[in-house]
Length: 341
Ligand SMILES: NC(=O)c1ccc[n+]([C@@H]2O[C@H](COP(=O)([O-])OP(=O)(O)OC[C@H]3O[C@@H](n4cnc5c(N)ncnc54)[C@H](O)[C@@H]3O)[C@@H](O)[C@H]2O)c1
Image 1 (spheres, protein in one colour):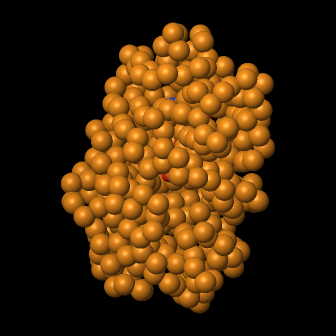
Image 2: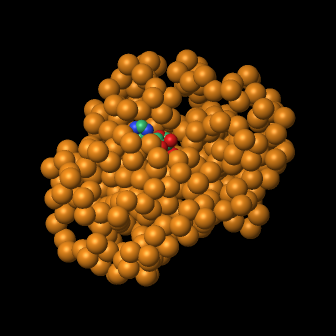
């Protein structure tokens, strides 16, 4: 199990042996975040730069990183530092886990989404042929360092992107605290840094109970069966859509499925959907006409078994049920019927 450290990255000192340091950044984190690392670290490091954006979470980027490690003769005691959002964290963790059968790595998440979600829980991976996270491994970092000061250079859109996973945690968590802190609020007026520890706690508790996602960890996939399909289809069509934005739409659709399959209360569902729509302006009118293609993506979801399309849905707030099967007709109807986003 890896552990979490809160505080300033400037004061962080590496507390284990390593033979060389390799810092993975993307073009944005090179500019905004790398200068915040201590010079004692960056001066001795090999900086590896990957292009920013989900479309670069690929095997080509992984190959480039493996080669850069190899060209610098990185041995099995080399250390990788992933300095970036979920894209850099997933990709860098995957390369660290596979290079020479695994080298140590550190996660330094720099987006809200990566602080509350992707840097926690040891999942690493890349997309393949447009399918999200098709290749990957569970591979824990030595430590995850949370320094919320990185958030200052994020746009409002990127902050809302992170709130998508915070909303998810608030809906699946048994305790009310997080939901009470954000429900019906203007999210951009909340203070995200104050919400980070509680989100990490909620995710860590779920992960610790089921680290390899055999059962209850699947609750974290609420909104993601539909969301991943939307994200993948948006990528194929060249539509500008962030991970959290796809997940937000995925959650609204899966809330409707939750009512249809498990009786999630309609009143609360409508209030949640209205609150989400007050906060997010996502251009997603195309979803209706792409319903059949989205369904195909869902059928390819790695969470499925025996060709059944499976979801993690909510019976009520804080009561998530994994492996709920929905038939094609219900999924298509829900996607097509849906009100304008
Ligand atoms: N491993 C997991 O458990 C898990 C969970 C959720 C999501 N994910 C993955 O995370 C990814 C999404 O993560 P993300 O939203 O952080 O995306 P991202 O890493 O692409 O970052 C979003 C954008 O913000 C920029 N950026 C990063 N930090 C910045 C900073 N401090 N200042 C200015 N710009 C900055 C990046 O360059 C990028 O353009 C997806 O690939 C998703 O599949 C993984």
